[in-house]
View 1 (tube, rainbow, N blue to C red):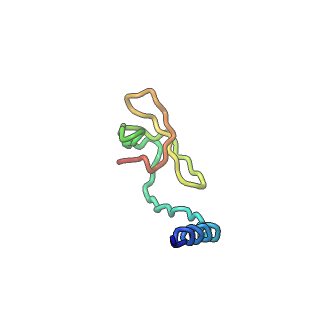
View 2 (cartoon, rainbow, N blue to C red):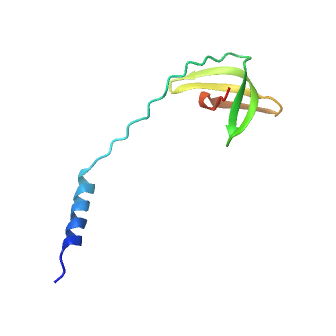
View 3 (cartoon, helix red, strand yellow):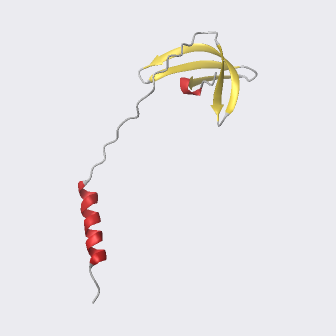
Length: 88
């Protein structure tokens, strides 16, 4: 006679899945004390490690953080970036 152990395990798993609720907790943001001003020359990570020189054209404060409008040197490109993308 076979044991009903797999059935018991499956039933226990289904009970746990129905009773457990996982609440999402937003990740804490590290305070960034860097100050950026219009005209500062910085290096930014634009896309997948491509680091370019840029000049800050505007500093925009949002409730979820600071964004920088930068003019990328050598490219005809103006980008809106997050301060996480600033390398130097």
